[in-house]
Structures are given as C-alpha cells and as structure tokens.
Length: 269
Image (tube, rainbow, N blue to C red):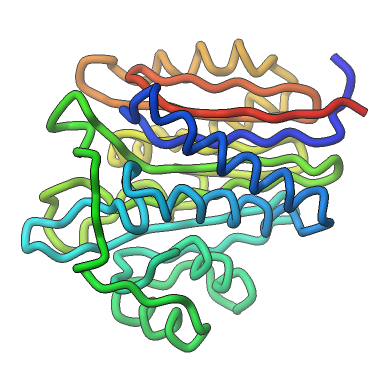
C-alpha cells in the first residue's frame, strides 16, 4: 500500500449502535478539517473526541453514565508519537475531559485525578458541566443491548500519530473506579509506527496491557487486519466487550465483538 497523506479513525464505543455512525462520521469530519488547517495531531484527536463527548448517545461527556451514588466521574487521555501523554481520572464537572487531558500534556505531570483534576481543569478555563446537563441516551455495555462505552480517535497527519479516549465509565460503579483509559499502554498508545485506541471492559483491557501489546505488533510490521484478528481473540466475546481502532503509516483496521459505530477517512499521497 502507498503511504497516506493522512488517516483518521473515530469510534463511538463498544456496543454503540451501528445507526449511530453519524456521530463518529461527524467527529472524523471535524478531525480532518483540523488536519487540513495545520493543527497538531494531538489537537486533531482532541477535537474529534470532543464531538463525541458532546453527543449524548455515547458514554463520554454529556452522555456519561452515573456512578452508584448518582455522581458522574469521567476519564480521558491523549498521547502522540513524540511521547507526550496526559490523562485525567475520576474528574467531575466538565463537559470535555479530553481537553483537560490535553492540558495535562503541557505540565510536568502525566495523570491528574479527582478533585485535583477538577481544580486543574477550572484553572485551565475549561467549560463546566452540571449533573443536570448530562443527558445520557445509551446504557452501559454490561446491562443491555443498547450498550455504549469509551469513545476514541486515532490519527496520522502524514508525519505524526496520536490517540485519544474519553469515557464516563461503568454505569453503577463505585465512585473512584478507574478503568483502562488513563493508563498508558492499556487503553491507548501512540508511537512513531502507529496509534491504538481501545474500548470495552476496562479491567480486562488493562490486565492485557492491550494498547502497548497491539502497538508492538504494529511496530514489527504486522498488517492492521492481522493485528485486529489477533487482539480480538484476547477477549471472550460473551464476557468481555471489546473493540479497537488502529493505524500505521499506510493502513488501518477497526472492529469489535459487539456492535460499534465507527468511521474512517484517509487520503493517499
């Protein structure tokens, strides 16, 4: 395959309805517009993920699932191929946690959590969000057919790669529960050879160190379709919801053992 001028994939999460594909499609359009405007690849994935955070059909931002006590705690992370990584965990009160994660990349830290993350987001001037503004229209992947989970994006701008994720977590989980999203090498990874963004059962994804192991297969030159087939086999389709999108310099793959709304846009040189 010839090398691409750019590649961008977006997904609405493991269990997101196929008829919700317009959400990832719109996110991809926003991402491509950002690429063409000269934005950094990290900015690109953040803008794309923010579109999904603003769509209440998906489990992120305004669509986040409540915890057992009715609170809403969100996780987000972003990484690029130069090694910049930032994440927030169990953060409350902000519409777009992906922008908080991006802001963390500009500090000496890698992950901020809880009240400290919220204070940081406030100082960064991010848009606040009350619980009353959360209008989740999906249900958690573990509780019904209309399941939704972590949203994400991977992008290649012709030179660099990036990956971004955002989630409201598991519906009904205890406050403070954190899944794979803000753990580097678990839910996402980006390096000089490509980028990976996963979705699904966060505990299982983390235990498998899914993203870094997937990236290592990209690094050794395996074809994206072959990698996808291998990684899907790590998860039992009955017990562990799992989906993934991944890219290298000349190709991509995406798939899930549940329905998953996703989209891809690419352009050859």
